[in-house]
Amino acid sequence: MLAQSILAGLFTGALYGLLGLGLSLSWGMLRQINLAHFALAFLGAYLTYELSSHRSVDPLLTLVAIVPLFFVLGAALHWVLTRFRVSPFNSLLVTFGITVIIEALLQWTWTADYRKLESSYAEHRLQIGPLYLPLPELITLAMGAGISLAVWFALRRTDLGKAMRAAAEDAPIAAAFGVNQNALALMLSGLNAALAGVAGVCIALAYTLSPSQIYAWIGVVFAAVMLGGLGRPLGPLIAGCIIGVTEAVTMSITAPSWAPLVSFSLLMCVLLVRPGRVA
Image (cartoon, rainbow, N blue to C red; front, side):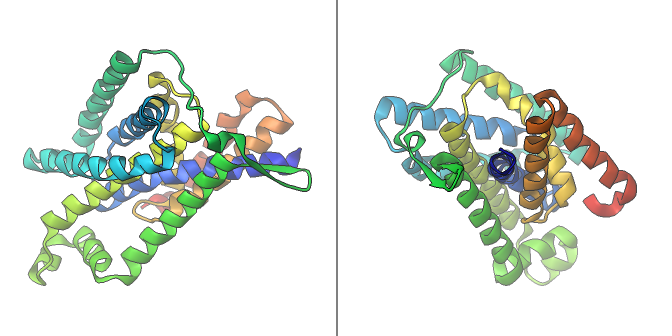
């Protein structure tokens, strides 16, 4: 039972990391605290539900439409924020307003009723000894780990990634060496929104959907981002898995109500002992 709980925590933590990846890059490299990231993820989840349930499209194939659409939405949002010189704190307020608008649109379109995507993936699970590995959760884990590693490699080993990091660290010096900061920022913001769309597909595969659940993910994903460090691609994944495992083990030993207490106590301890950890 304990081993199964740890596995469930890893699966949940991978989704925390996938959700937190775009938020971490936006906050750490673009200096924008984008709360609309969560609303975009649920918009992606509902689009997956709609296309799969009523258009008979495979849930994973919805990425073909969702990723480019969300890339454009993310770039457009960044253009608006920079056009009006929105400060980091004000970006928090503006994107929170966008989140409320998207929640209202979701509720208006799909109502506030709970919805569950019935797909062939949910019927398959692997068994290793006494342990069960549901296919939707395995897909989430593979996507979370694979995308995080790919983004880490791109930022560390490619010229484009190095240019993005240089622009984030010292924009004037990077511009003096020919780095087009505005174009790179638009590209990165579009990538972050596309990552939210990918996370939305994973949410649709494994979870029941409701517009109000947008806010249930904000606190724990923020904790994963802050524990993992801003602008660090692998940080949210590692921190998310740690939080997911601690929550799952706590729920299996005590009660579900104790899970948030443990995860946020861990965050508070890290902030108190190493306050520079989230820089």
